[in-house]
Each structure stands twice: as C-alpha cells, then as structure tokens.
Length: 70
Image 1 (cartoon, one colour):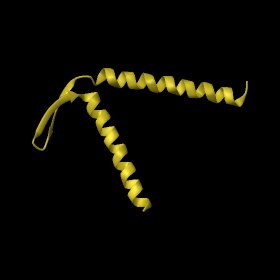
Image 2: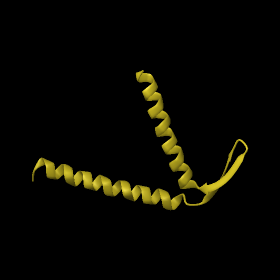
Image 3: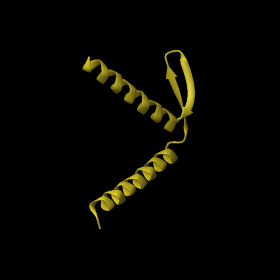
Image 4: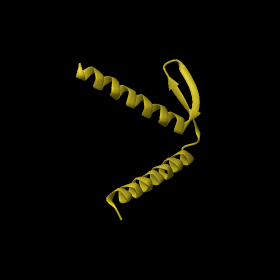
C-alpha cells in the first residue's frame, strides 16, 4: 500500500466524520430562536444563527489580517 493511498483514505475518513458531526449539530439545533439586535427583532433557526456568526467571525478575521499586513 502506497503512502498516497493511506493519506487518501484518511482524508476520506475525516471528510465522512466531519459530515456526520455537521449533521448531528444541525439536527440538535433546529429550533427557532428570537434575536434582538438594537431596534430589530427577528426569528431564525439556531443553526442558521450559528452559521451566520461563524461566517461573520471569518470575515472579521480576514479584514483584520488584511489591515495588519498594511
């Protein structure tokens, strides 16, 4: 068995495990929550809120990193 085939199998295994973790998180966080932000009030599923916060964190990190390089 070559080194590349072992890494390919490990990559596949970690991909399957990551998908399973995401599915479990989505199933356990599907209830609707109310979000109050300043004067706005809206409802969305908890997993959508987690996803939005994750994306906003990535964007802020990218922006700050870009400002630091200048």
